[in-house]
Length: 189
Image (cartoon, rainbow, N blue to C red; front, side, top):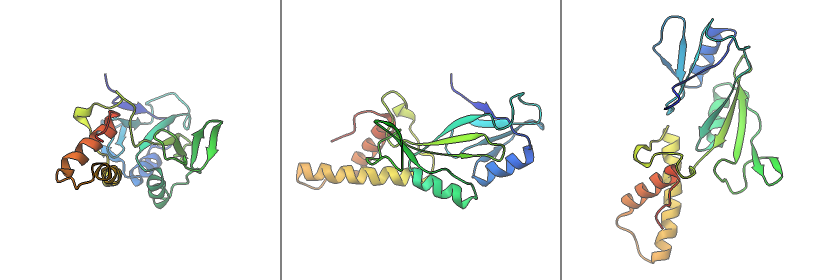
């Protein structure tokens, strides 16, 4: 089973549609009374409509995963969205700012749609084992892929330092590293 669609409650369908399309979410083809939008790179969509749910507008909370939280927040601000400050989960709970080590799953921030539905952004660069199928990895955006290349480049530099010689098969090494990072499996050394 896979999650396909999450219904979010909104008071004004037109306003919500304008908001989410401004974020770059794809407007999908749906029946006339349903609006469905899909975030870039996501396999799951959101739906809303006049009589789609009895939940109060603004009562939904969802998670959005990003590979670079600073870039994601910059894009939201550029789209005119008010975002909360970045925080991270430390040993004593939530603390202000980015995770000092930029560990996956640690840095977060949030924003709200015009109805007050909350979206929590979570920075994930390396998945925990078993979370992603290594045979179906993908990158949601140019920025996600570029970030993966930068991390692979840094790790490959360490690999070449350890071996003491240039690696002519660096494209294969980068590919193996990037897929292992997404799937949460052991990367090459």
